[in-house]
Amino acid sequence: MKVSNKRLFAQNEVFNFFFCAVDDLKGSIVPDYLIVQPRNIREDLVSGVGILPVVDGRLGLVKIFRPALQGSFWEIPHGFLDENENEIDACVRELHEETGIETTSGDIEFLATVAPDSGVLGGLVKLYLARGSLPSSKVQHEIGLEDFSFFTKKETEELINSGRLVDSFSLVAIYKYFMAVGES
Image (tube, one colour):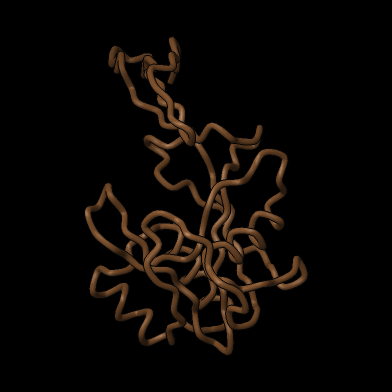
């Protein structure tokens, strides 16, 4: 495979949008292959973090409106790395901003690395578990953020089965957590 002629055609405050040519070297060429890449991305392609807060065996999820899916869904808190921010600091910050939970780096443990959509999105997200406490401060306003709540394993499975929890970050983090504690 050969990727060439990568050209920026649009950008906003979060993403760069590129077209490039993709040649399989067997005669098939896609002249305008779309790549969406976060503007703040490290050399190792990590651009964000997702955090699964767990308190007394209950999983913390945010309910957020997703314009691309035209609806509200439950997800783990997640967000982009700020410039020159390490992953653990981003976890502590995002968790506090979206849930009001205050935690320290010692409460954060790595779960997995995911590619949100490796066919289009040029970036990786690191997923973490945050063992912590209940929210202690007010959640910062974020567009679309509607609610934060804790769920049992059974309630989480019901959210997944009903299509109200579909986010890839969340699904991977939840399954990794259940695998680690001996549940599926």
